[in-house]
Amino acid sequence: MSEVLSGAAALITQLLHAALMVVAAPLLVGIVRWLKARMLGRRGASPLQPWRDLRKLLRKRPVLAENASAVTEVAPVVALAATFAAAILVPSFALGMALGPAADLILVAGLLALARAALVLAGIDAGTAFGGLGAGREITFAALAEPTLVLAALTLTIIAGGTNLDAIGTAFTDAAPTLRISLALVLVGLLAVAIAEAGRVPVDNPATHLELTMVHEAMLLEASGRHLALWEMGAALRLLVWFGLLATIFAPFGMAPAGAGPVPWAVGLAAWAAKMGVLALALAVVETAIAKMRVFRVPEFLGAALLLGLLAAVLLFVSTGFA
Image (cartoon, rainbow, N blue to C red; front, top):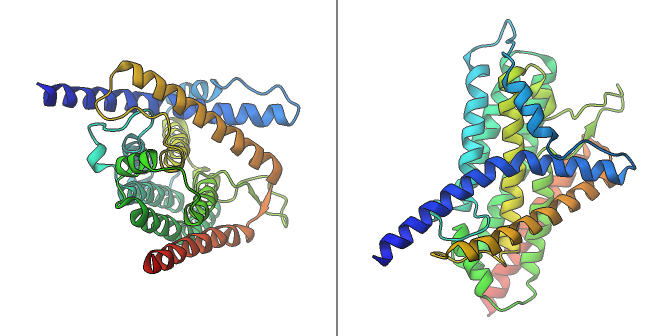
């Protein structure tokens, strides 16, 4: 009977988590935009505005380019499905969900890479100059971001004994609070990667004075209607996935343990909302302070994150070997 109750609790938790991801992703984007507007002295749109935009776009039929193939129609569905799969694997308010055994950091990274590949293919499918430019830069940035995530997974494997997110959250929750230089380096590196991977680094082209993020948005210039709504929802989920990873790995406090009931879930939900609020505020501060970044600075930005991940792994190897 206890096993049946535990399985039912895990399934209910998983369903609640999936619904929370769908509802919270556009809301998180709206909150970040509202915070940035308030910091700049403007009133700003309502945090619910992304939901209104999605509803409006879903009612419109997409317009396809003459040279577009079936890739343009399939890519947004694949990207959204992969990102949503990653989102439901990353714990939010509780551990021990039904898909907890499959919640591996490497698997989440692979799903995000699949979504990125779909975005790149959609960018180059129509054959436009901006799409190809953005796709090439996206691949360049990914070549630095993905190794950083792998090095972070290696460091976490040594510390927590595996890359399962449930196991990592449980290990860091139960461990005595100590200062680990390796974890601090991994945190800074993942923060940099999260900002870049979620498309939150504004890049301009000073030669032509284009006020355009010449990476992610450049690949979506041909998207419209329902297709654009799917891309926007996928981008919001991607940001929420990265926030969830940071919260699960580095701030797992407040999460309901496996097999818990409604009261621990409510406490975990409140803690999760507080962590998302802090991260949203931090992101708004960073974006307001940076304003614009030259495009050739982004590889340097991600290269520094890769170096921090490598230093974290090396320091941990050295300290473990002499322990």
